[in-house]
Image (cartoon, rainbow, N blue to C red; front, side, top):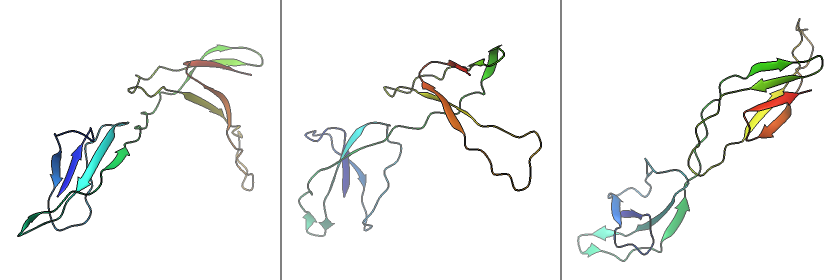
Length: 130
C-alpha cells in the first residue's frame, strides 16, 4: 500500500496505489507543493506498520513560450524591444531573457555559428539593445 498526504501529521492519508509492484508514479500533482508518502506491506495476515514518512516537493512548471519581441523604437545604434507579458504562474516570479546573435546575410560553409549573448535579464517586458 502506498499512501500520500499534503500534511505529515494528517489523518487524511489517501491510498494512491495497492499492488505487488515496488514502484509507482504519482500523477496530477500540483507544482511547488510538498507531498508526504508512506508505504506498508500487506499479506493474508493483514497490513504491516507503515514506513517512515518521505517528504518531496514538486518543482515549478516551465513557463509557456513568449511571443516574439517587436521593435518599438529604433535609433542609429540601438533599438527598443517589447513583448507581451505572460500571466504569473503561482508564486514563482517570471524573469525574461533576451539573447542576441549575429546572423550572417550569406552563410559560409565553414563559418561557425556565433554564440548568443544575453543582452537583458529581468522582469520588465521591454529592453533597449545597444
